[in-house]
Image (cartoon, rainbow, N blue to C red; front, side):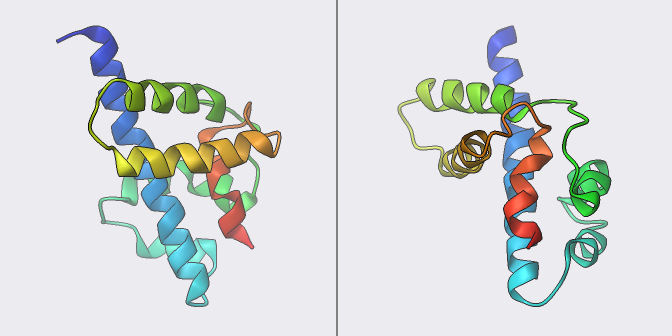
Length: 120
């Protein structure tokens, strides 16, 4: 397997899972749940790993301890979209979330910053 493609596939899995977390927080908020409650309900689900990994940043609302920046994941998401003629709707949604974070001046922050709009 080509190393560059492998990296994009790994980052696709990370990014799509992160976007799932954004949408879970959005759904929870719309139904009266705060972020901590949503994160707790996600334990043991397919989103449980990312919820556990990024949960402290999300509940604290602090995204400056960057493990992987929004800018870098956005770059990779753009590469993913250019690497296939077929649609990647989940990656498109992810890129929209990342672009909104970049426009808000948070491109250097950790990728979990895409959850900020869902925190109320």
